[in-house]
Image (cartoon, rainbow over all chains, first blue to last red; front, side, top):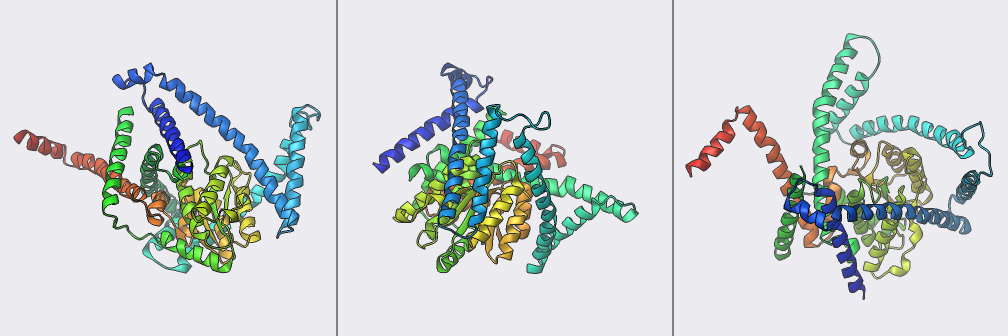
Length: 226
Length: 260
């Protein structure tokens, strides 16, 4: 039975995968291929599939909310470590959901003339917390570079730290010949080696994505076979 | 451009199919050592011995967007980790900020436990959604809480992360836990290189199945990637060499063919 289900899943994946790929990749100037895709209305089918994907991803939000309630509810019931935070999270989540429903049903008038209360809540709680974390991030990054050298001094680590220092110092808005020289070095670094390295990494990821995509299209991915 | 895309896909398809058959016949494919893949079984061993869970995270990657394939690649890595960890009592925790990655996380853990015939130990609650898809720093804060509250023994962070990965890795270091990290986003990749105990670079995340798994198809993925990479290098270098020699290179090649 399990094998039959796996086979069915693979057939569905391969069929939908190839149809969608064909619809996305074959345009109007490929002669016979374009005529074939047009005859079978592959482009229309592809757009229907993509709409289905959007709807399915939308449904997963419900799964996410249920997961959140289940995980934190379970933590409170079992009094596991950090359970008071879970209570806080559950109360906050339910309050925001209730607030948003009330706004949508026009039961709650917009505060401050235009902005809804849920938006004000987001701006007064979420944004300051994020700003504080962003400030911490700088220290974490600099400390990370220090740790890199502390762990083991290698040529690559040395180069990484040197480039980091040049990039940081070169970005300083200070007057002086030294700083302007560093700024020029920084600009060159960003335009040539950093850009080349970044493109190399992205090309490698793109090729790997194509190969992994081919595996999925052939039904070789584990999630369809098991 | 469409034709080039089709040719690349067909080339990848043909190379993959051919090398799967070759590797199926002679299984010993030499692979260069990758420190992170050597560390992972040790991390799982530590997790089992300490009775503490491993933490894996998809970051901001999910299904239905640009990161779909990266999500599937990360899921394969997590499957390999979870399958080894299924021998112990502490089930790994998988976190995601996109809801579309949540079913993938649950299914990855379920399949790993099913493969060890220990489905009774599987708990769907160990796949967790931290709702912060547009607030990466809030997600990082949630991960630091997971590392502390669940007393995780190690972290495998693979998917899409930005610079906020630094906060998570810093927390992991403070807790004395080891981390394997990578990101398909360049900012996260740089942070992973600087701060993770064992970083995975670039496309290495896509080779997890080949290194940690044992099927011919997974190993053929690595060979196919290498062949495509060499072809790409040639496609870049040959026109450059031709330009540097004022077209003499291509002329010489044409003359060689005409002579024949």
